[in-house]
Length: 564
Ligand code: NOJ
Image (tube, rainbow, N blue to C red; front, side, top):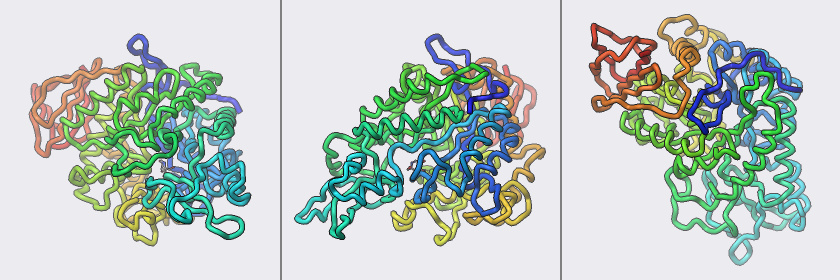
């Protein structure tokens, strides 16, 4: 299939000389988590047919592109991030013709489609790994993963001290075909997710071929899972006393952010550049890094001109609702990306972290896995204000399904309903990612609030229908209408999203006044109203504001957009 995009979904950014241009520079990209978006066949699990049927909703929301989390053949040990076959669709999600139909329909609606690529590890049910185990210690296929003898007198200890991100050791011991304990294999995540050995040429060749398979299908890009993890330090050295599980603000780890990963992305970039951009001819197919690195400067390495196009800005996602902190991270993010000419990205929520309406409802400093609902009204007020700030910034913004409905995390899921492997590996102390994965409500009523006819794989809470698309559509002041208006305004005002600079004006403590071409954004992060001089004509506000004469009273936790 070739690309057939109906209309360019956004204007190409005009930008400082030397900067690259393309649809993705200032795109609003919507993350669909296929399990939880829409269930087309009534089995309680979202699927590709469900996504296709709801694409007009995304067109009307105004986003430029959709990123789909994995839908490949998988035993689902980590909700599809354990891939058994990279070229087929899991029957739970549909079939290759369903994927083709989704791509065609999205392109006909002017939406681009980015798929998830999982190159750091496969499933333990991947053909290579199954054979590597079955063939025993001499199998050449073992070289495509990290198999090592254990330490200790009988090899009973793991080969090094690395821990899995999901808790417990990063190594699992195998049993040889004759039933005796054998070598160990590395898995930075669950034991069902063995890490590939990227030093092996067959691994690199296979992924170049997988890229081409999906590019030939017509996808517009790839979100690259654990992009920072592919290459491990020579000799797999012990980590020593470091805090292993902290993903940001650490020294470079022997298993993360090794300089060798960049060679992989340079090779992928040449492949993407071979593919035509499609009839809209305003930029090509893209690579987006999920790279947790110690600093924004190291994140910028992933988006050098001959590597990827975008990288998620997790430093921004991890920032508290605090004016000074926000300003600092905005400035450092823009400064880090400027030298490499890549757009900064902004993201507040995804399928791995507590939804921002709940993060901001709780005191700062609790991290991104929170189990308490906090003050829900305050959380929603701040979430709406945070979204308007995000959408005012230059670069590309990511929206996670359901945040446009102001959904909170579901913090009271019963343990027996939970499916996140990290919850079990960390013995219930961590891994609360199911709370942001609860299927989203489309209608006020119905067994799963319009998600599908067959219930929902995670229980939806009472009252979910009041937050549904149906309940919010056309309702003035609803969160859904706020998102629609904000995204429409971003299109109508080319100054928003474009470029790579913001100008700060002086403001009272806890307040931000940010100027962009033809536009001012005022943000009050404090818990009390603040009076400001009116900077222009009111365009959009995250909460009702009173403008009187030359003064505006900015309510607590509110963002207002002004044209000037
Ligand atoms: C990052 C993904 O976003 C997450 O959901 C997954 O568990 C890990 N990578 C492992 O693939």
